[in-house]
Image 1 (spheres, each protein chain N blue to C red):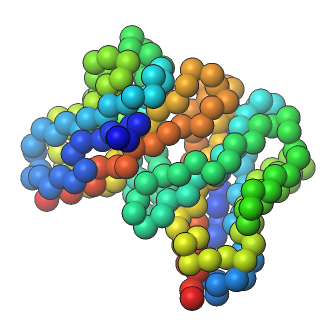
Image 2 (image 1 turned 90 degrees about the horizontal axis):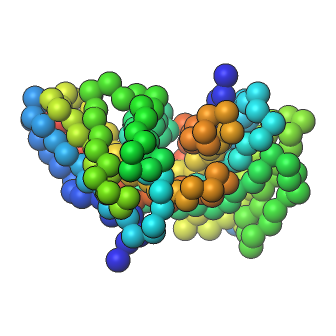
Length: 115
Length: 113
């Protein structure tokens, strides 16, 4: 059955440290998409990245980078040189062709970056 | 103006009351969704609609109903609210193309006493 696991409930780091948020997924589909969203304290959900199952190329956007590994069914998110503004809840989500591309969300990881 | 607008933003009501949460969008997207967020549980899908004539139940539809009044409007109703429906509710939209991300409203915080 399809599932997204974010085992880290909460992570605390000191500013400027690097931090990796883990996301492990389960699916039987060969066609699927993975997403990361950020939910800052203000509550809105902000789209960060989309990755399809046929593209394992890692991506970097400023201080953010994503490592997609089909062999381990993981799509991990790393923040380099964290800042207080990175404090938020981060959600990983899966959408599958067999599920008509509805999202399945993980339970989220709360990141606290301390000054 | 926000692309996906939810009203109200906050609501406190009593058990047994009928409540409607509204969502409107200016993105021109065909697909619309309602989720609820509970601490430690992430977001769970309540209902979704791929176009005006297509409405489907999600993971947790019991106790909820929806109406897709137009392409731009998708409302969620709680016919007889109960305390365990206290949650943060999100509306989202997406394009018909399957690989596009969903865009979320700012959420409605609902408390049922």
